[in-house]
Length: 368
Length: 165
Image (tube, rainbow over all chains, first blue to last red; front, side):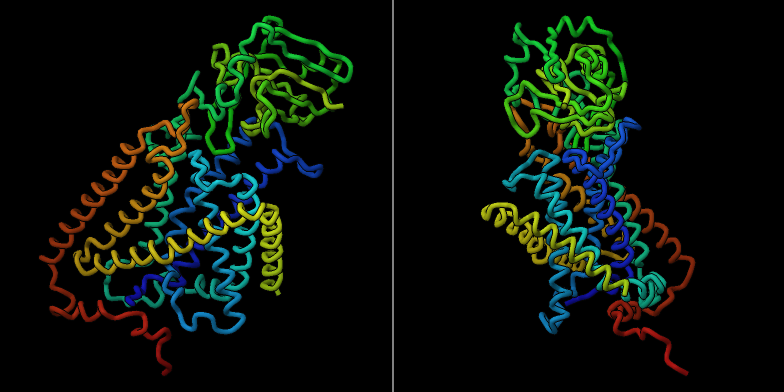
């Protein structure tokens, strides 16, 4: 076997460090998104700034994509070790090789299924979010085990010059070139996709799963037809019910339109990493809650016309419910909401995943 | 000590992830294992050997001045091709939601690949011209054929440390 002297620890350690940074960023931003959707008493997620979730989740997906070329080059730099003898050896060596197998397998798994998921390609036939969440602990844990095992090698590699051990014979490819090529590839991967959350790059992000276009200038994750609300949302007897214990009020679409309207710029940010700013017009949720005597310290449940399913009802924490920028929107970008954006009315709150911005609202309950 | 702590923390995290995964019914678990194994097998025994073969062939066919630009272009191309797999044929397209995978991905992929390789040709050509004009002004540093001898040497030929005096 020909083994290029380019491969080796000098490159592995340096790219490995950045890959470790990428995995950490993905892990932490992923945990944030998980705990917003599965709130825990100890978890605090602010409503301010309004773009915070847009940033963390955009970063999550963009970092995962940028990690793909890093992983390719990292694996390239160590691949010949796969065939080192003995194949099994001592128990310690077996343990080390086993931990690397878990690391590589979980990492490829996580990046591949993540990339498929943002393109809505569910060929893997399991529920993505729970598996992605569970596997993230395996990936992050095996990175830490790997660092523990390799710490002396890593220290040595960073202590030596990058091209240590390469004959100085004017050969055309230096290790520095490999590193620069890798950073370039990570940059190209980012530019090719990040336009789905960074609007000024949308024209060059030719491989982004979303162009950013859609009805009223916004993409849609779940259309009215998919949710099965085309008839109920447009029915003449549609009413929005707002309740607080026994107190209850119902509103027609006209009633809602006659309440004080507020117009705000708020981003809609999907868990899949796309996001867009839009101008939303509607009633401040806190005002609507006040009509049934709801206070600022209660969580608020949002119930959709959509038949029961994982996202047909959500609970908005009190911190977001009392925020003056949380709207029950009737309009977006100056037009009555498209059915795919949640006509007749939807929730739009600052710094929340799009999947929790419940559309086609039928009932708003103060949780008592 | 720090290695032991790191190792223990890492193993605990892996174990927690495994416990969460084990919540899945057996058929789902099997699918997860198959997908994870397929990724490793595809990389280690299909992708990596192909890369090694292309690298080996490239070093023999291409003049040295082209090794860097073609190598980098190959990495960029592989990255773009991988990113294109889930969108190229729009397998996730939905009849009732035209905003998902809504670009012309074949056009985007081929344009971006063309851009990579046009830049590569331009850069390599520029380097060729530079190398040629430099070659006319200065004598070759090594006699004919000797550079090939050096080329065949590998890391094993070079002592890691200077010999003790």
